[in-house]
Amino acid sequence: MKTGNLLIVDDEVLIQKGLKLTLRDLAAEIHTASDGLEALEVISKHTIHCIVCDINMPKMNGVQFIQKLREQNNDVPLIFYTGHGNLTLMREAAKYGAFDFLDKPNLDGLEDVVKSGLAKGLKLTESPASDSEFESEYKRLLKSLDD
Amino acid sequence: MSIAILLAEPDLKLANEIKGQFESNSLEHLILSDSKNWVSEVKDKKFSHVVLNYELEKDITDILLNKLEADHGHPKVILVISEKQKPFVKKSILENQNVCQVLSFPYTFQQVLSCIDEKKGANVTRFLSAKHLTTKVIEEIYTKGLNEKNIAFAQKISESISLMVQKDKDFHEVIKAFDDFRPAVYTHPFMVCVFSMMICKKLKWDSPRTLSAVAFGALIHDIGMTSLNEELRSKNPSEMSEEELKIYQTHPSQGMTLAGAHNQIPSAVLQIILQHHEANGKGFPGAISGAKIYPLAKVVALADRFARYVLTNNLPIFPALKKFASDRLELLQHDPEMVKALIKSFIKDEKE
Image (tube, rainbow over all chains, first blue to last red; front, side, top):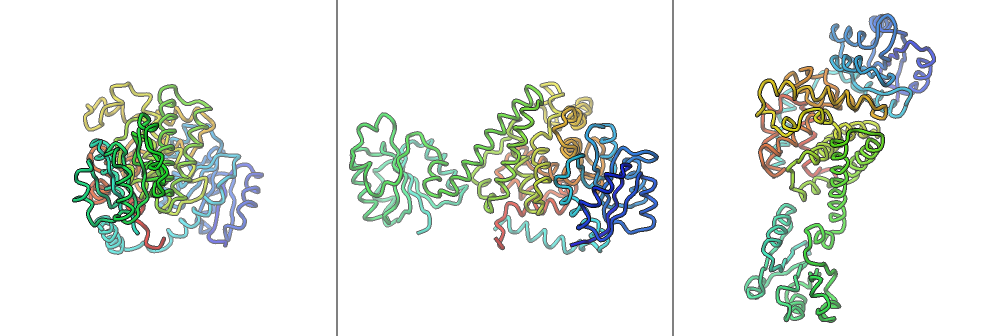
């Protein structure tokens, strides 16, 4: 079932096309961008529920992109799909709340992660459960431990 | 007939050990340490199983066996004999129709459980086997460093642990049977892995890739500790000086560096290692909070805190869980849905 809108950000057009094909059954719309700047423009024009993003890109890399997103109070789930190796960038990426990390060229698990990301992104648009609902369920659980 | 066990065992130390395990497993039982009190202690009682140590009263073992059949519910008998005694035990005793198993002395609770409940016994054995293998590989990683071979082995073990937790719908019963949570350096990663898998199961995070990353990340989350000196490694953070604490708090980053040198280790696992001490603004190295913390790292962080909580409070698992779940200061450091999942993983699901 197709739910939500996906954005794929990668400077390699072949990878954009490959990912779009692989993930076509998961999202209602799939947009692409070649760097962080272009991605910000897409986001300003379309509602996006999940992003798959490379780290190493020209003009604005993946870390600069997520930093900008979070500065704009945009908590859209962002999945870094990137080559293994640049620990400096990985440490930077850790500060801004990525949803998940997958290593190129492995596609194992990508669909599951994107599905979860889209679900999370869609949930962000719903109103959260009330504190009192949570409290009463929590109290019930604590009581079960006594039983 | 529901399970009710008579343990006729003259060795008081072993009898008390096994009694403790019966209690942890909520198994109805009666302990007899000599046959003098047989008549008064077992009068009118029925048993499903009897563990009978031949040493109790070797001359009248066959009489006892007959009494059990006639007066005490026709129980299955697990006969315990030492190697020395074996040649002298009467054939009629060994071939008694009620004797379902012969064990050698000394025996363990797991062996008794296997005879009583094959499935439960098998699950406990599998758990202990996984713990043993994990301890061995973690010890090697901590003493000799990461290499291609031990990384591959640790990945395989983490997948087995994940499968073990996912497949057993009564896994919380296995945890109850195992109440030794004194996490030594090499067993702590195993418990963090087990708790992480239990949390994932209740969150319904069942994709193989996610489970694999969390399980492996949990196993090697503290690899950075190997970069600290021996003295600091064995010290509790609450006892460290300011200077020592600063050094200690570098271990997640050091761990990412150590693990990052190996392409076999996925980026997701590196992030778990880096962020496993983040705690809603009160953690390190980044003091990040909420959505900024990598979700898979949050699971391992919670499992790690809980495993340490059990140790520092020196409590059995259930009382420790109740205390942890009521500790407001502790709870503020974790994702509330994940804390709920941790609690739920120790409660039998009514829907299952």
